[in-house]
Length: 242
Image (cartoon, rainbow, N blue to C red):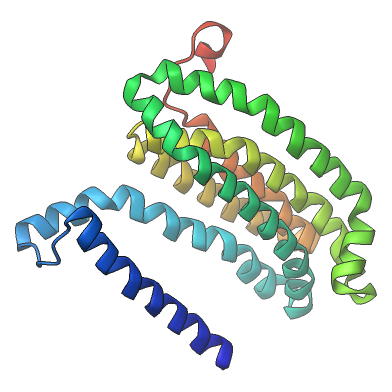
């Protein structure tokens, strides 16, 4: 209970600090906009508001499907491996948040500059995340055993699949944030929705046969869909794939 109130108070303190800082530093006004301005604001923000909702469903629907088809024990084993994957994805998210301002500036100067940044970053990030995926598969028994204990050994094969979701996310995130930097929020939204629907369909098909491993397997679908939605137009051999 105290942890819940601690979270609430932390958010309240953050708001209390940020609003005065925004008003003094940026000259922002807190006046309520008119109904027409409010409507335009809501409609223009939908492409950015919808993906987080879809992603929330995406990250929780597997547990719902797994619990309904395989029971609470399967959900517990799946979520144990899932927590490690979420931690790794959080590290990737911190990285992309650091380079996103640069991506936005380059997109404003022309898509070719942003393309060059992505093509330079992908091999470097790939050289970091692919060994993590391989090491995660090899060291999965030790990782799961050290974090959760011997009772969670059935989570090992689930983790060995989910670790590749973090690898895919580490590469895909360049393309999805390039969509946002280039002002293509609608295309990004379609990619996220397509990936979420594909994940749900595959989970419904695979969970009855493979349980937690079946729930883990579709997790690359959203990353693949977002990557295929890349709006930039590379030159040379890449052009036919975009």
